[in-house]
Length: 497
Ligand code: NAI
Ligand code: MG
Image 1 (cartoon, rainbow, N blue to C red):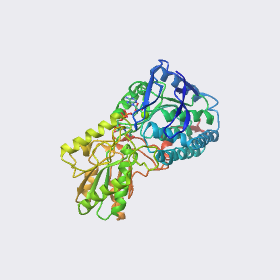
Image 2 (image 1 turned 120 degrees about the vertical axis):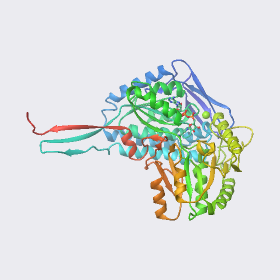
Image 3 (image 1 turned 45 degrees about the vertical axis):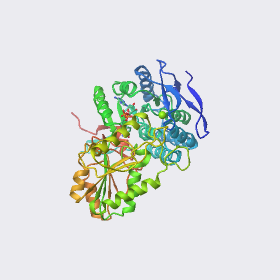
Image 4 (image 1 turned 180 degrees about the vertical axis):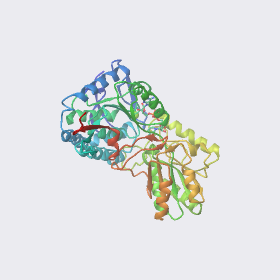
């Protein structure tokens, strides 16, 4: 198998798509010769095949990362030089922004304009943000007695295994690579099997930016094969994972083999609370953003909406109208499209199944509820009202353009019901009352609370979950502690025995 193919995307963009495993700065075939096929969810057609790693390939990638960790080309360079590599990478992503946006629009089904503006915009900023941190991470000096002081060193954890999902392929790679590299680690990153392409293109830019061989290795492969080989690998020191809570649990177990440090960012069923003193039109528009962005394939989607009873029917009607006028479903490459297909047949079927469950449970279908068109995995934005908290559709993560709305009476009731979930990722609160906004935010069991917005995350602000939504934080300066370990050096200034 050749290690690259020349592709022409539906929007006419021609580019060279790497298809190998990226190990030691080279694209190589899988040792087994196995490949995996990726399709476009817009027309269900095969885009291409890429090398598919198994445990033997993971061994080679880990060896490369281990060697790079100790190499003079990486360990021996200044922290500013490390930062400069990330700055260069950001510049290259900016240069090839249209290609990367094209790939994610094609392979994931994202509207191209969203991929270009939002995903790629953030990728560039994330690399620059962590580039800036590379030479600005300081330990402490700690005085004790006149005879003793200590200092701390923030050292890399080592070889980091990073396992990313399909909803934001190149962005998830950036969230994980940025802090890992700023802190001086080396990486083996595995993309999701549904969306293998943009990360391989990113790999070619990593090489071009001048990162030494082995610092970043990028493979594709199945979760249960390549992913499991990573989590169970004795040569990997840390696992960072974003995906389902079910896989997160398996990853945590497998990581026990050598007590890997882990960060997990998993599922959610995030609540959005609208009080009767909220600016209703803003609450409606942000609710739409909070659940329909990226076709609802966002871990922090605010997918459970609670509205105070006096404004409940006005809100439901308003959201219905707004979603129907604001959504343009169709070809991700068409300029006006805001809503593309779900990523895969599996996700498409799963969402349609939840729609049937919602109907059978007796919730009211207010909008959507069916596929759009006959080809591709398009689903109409779907709104259920009058749900109650014992319904499956109000408890389980659907991960699609699917929202449930129900009324509440009191603040206390809203908080109790918002917290009645195994998850704790995001939450949103709409009110004009400052005291109430902060009081409710404090009571919500979630890693992120938005006051009067939803899902407008920012790379400078920590991202992660309470409860079964995850462990640890990404983004912001908090991500640095997930990618470094602290060494205390004791200095004896005069205690003599
Ligand atoms: P998944 O959790 O199975 O896959 C995510 C990544 O983990 C992929 O790279 C996959 O290859 C890898 N993986 C899977 N099992 C693994 C294992 N045992 N060991 C190591 N790596 C493993 O998610 P999937 O099946 O794609 O989607 C299922 C559901 O997960 C979605 O419907 C959604 O509810 C949730 N999900 C959440 C995401 C988030 O952003 N938190 C992203 C993607 C999915
Ligand atoms: Mg695909």
